[in-house]
Image (cartoon, rainbow, N blue to C red; front, side, top):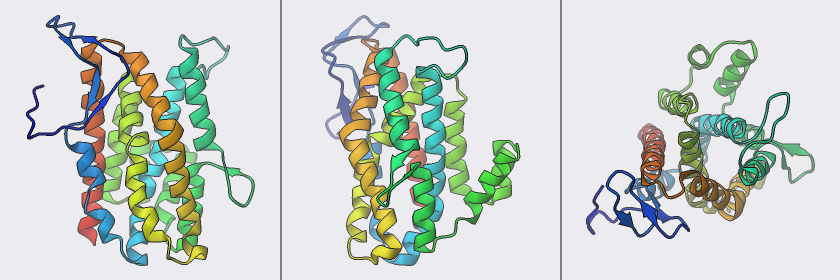
Length: 277
């Protein structure tokens, strides 16, 4: 893919010094993830400026919670592929990836709460919604249906999830069920961990002056994600992508295509929320 200077694509360079295109046998200076303009469009989305009052923030949470929930499934799919989660236990090929993914799971599935104890970031989000007066009934209906053994698609229907949120979840699970470790990793890394801190910084400032009893928990959730993802999780995931793609330009392009598709999926969700305002 050739980009002109007018395109100004967002490229995230990998530490690898050289990369050989196995098809053309031509060398390029570095292997990179090519996000095009998608990341900038997401970070600069007009939605953030529209969340200027409590009722709009509540609505945002009611739609965004679906992405918070399916994030956990994306992470667990990655854990299943990069670590051993079956019996009898066997060592997986990449001990560094094993260590790094388990570290992320520890943070995301059982993070420390400000009042003591532990919870997943999804559970923290639900608690934040309740304190803020947002409706949790649809997402709880989904959980209830899944616990009863209902498969995902009919469970989404029973929950009456917003159409754009349901579409976002379906896209996530298409990647999970694709059978591609690289696709799952690219979706998790560049569709979530890499971009989430920049998205959430746009919201944290707006919460600073709001009632801490109603919004303090949500602000804590956002700050935890910024801290974890920016300082540790993002770099961890990019390192695993680097190890998996190596110097194969074809793999880097496959990862790039998945990453762009995931960010576009998020943009469509943001568009739908903004349209509702």
